[in-house]
Length: 344
Ligand code: F0G
Image (cartoon, rainbow, N blue to C red):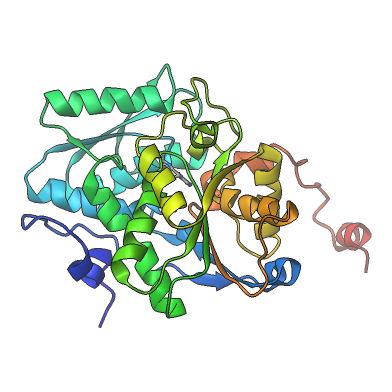
């Protein structure tokens, strides 16, 4: 049968109200890519779940198809979210598809260019907040409590329903859950969704390694971070809305939540790109965590099946690459000049 998107495919596992009216961009069905070079380096079987290949370039589309389908079905006219960028682009795209108005609040000056451009292209009304993601989230919660505007952040339970589908897909491809699942943690909706999904699907449970950036690691520190900072702007979050559930997921699974430095994140981004998978910095945090755990001797990858979730495409944040490299060399449009340069 032709692929019709996540809700159609996994309908029986998703708790969505009767009034839900499917709005889909054929999200999901992303590849689980084997990484032979990482396997050689770390042992074990290592796969990347490449969520950057969703329609708007991040995993957010899984939850957004569900949240917008529910909102549209109950007759909402306007949706709103706070975002470090990816949720904004996804909400804007699905709202456009449904014919709804979308408003997105982002922290001033801290959103990667590919995400901002996406939100604008899909027609969102973009508002910058003089504050953090956490401040923006408080504002959208308040306005949705006081007006009929629908909230599509991952506090919305249907976002979690939709995002569970990635764990279903992993089990469908591997035949069972992996031994370990490594992923970045920001507002903590995704780790919550994976854990709920694996528990529901009945194909085994992975241990979960959740990874925060050291400058934005409230779940590792055990308290909110007032001024979160990290190069991985997607997870620059000091008060995760689903923090408790994230800690529970890690603990129940026999895994943990750790923090890695920006340098470790960027190094993992390079490792992935050198094997053909370019992801945005936050998306490399899962691998950075795996590297750190292996190096410290706390984790032995050999003999294990490991899935590294890469949540967003590298094209979301091109500046992080272009700003750290010199512009390509310029030569005359002459064969001799080319041969001179590349050597023959
Ligand atoms: N990776 C990427 C690329 C993200 O954009 C996010 C979250 C995460 C990981 C963390 O996921 O919040 O469920 O723990 N981005 C949100 C946004 C906050 O607004 O786009 P989480």
